[in-house]
Image (cartoon, rainbow, N blue to C red):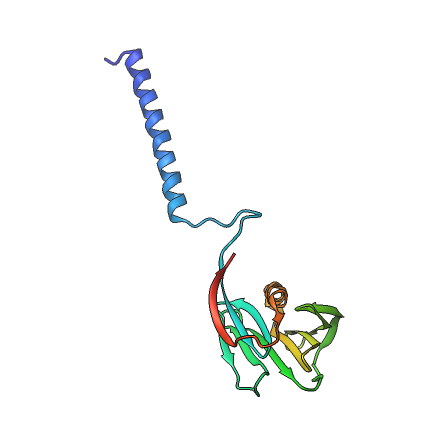
Length: 186
């Protein structure tokens, strides 16, 4: 027959083993399942840097870059997020041109890109469910630069975030060295 003292010892031992098992499962779960970054915590994201035609900017390294041949000192590049079907285009020209966009103009304001004033506009087309962001009328070294982003309305929030990140990273320099580099950015 089991005494009351032995029963209490067995129950205490069972409780300790149960708590130890729960703690072990908790730590195993944290080791296996990745955790989301906490508010204010820095996330290291791989960035690629495009440099050409006196201009440079960073974009997400997983995006595919298509450098289109252009006259010396000019840029014409397309950077594509194939996962979310977002296209970013940077180009320059000797004359300012303003191609017409289909859809409704939902935003037009002055903007500073790489320390140079320009104009930002956004169009939305409900029929085709597309959105276009454009920053242009940016003039550096007798060239006009245009930055555009195309995508679907369902990806508008991600587009806005990437748009702001790319435009914030734009820099203009005389005689910059051309090339593309990928580096982690904090």
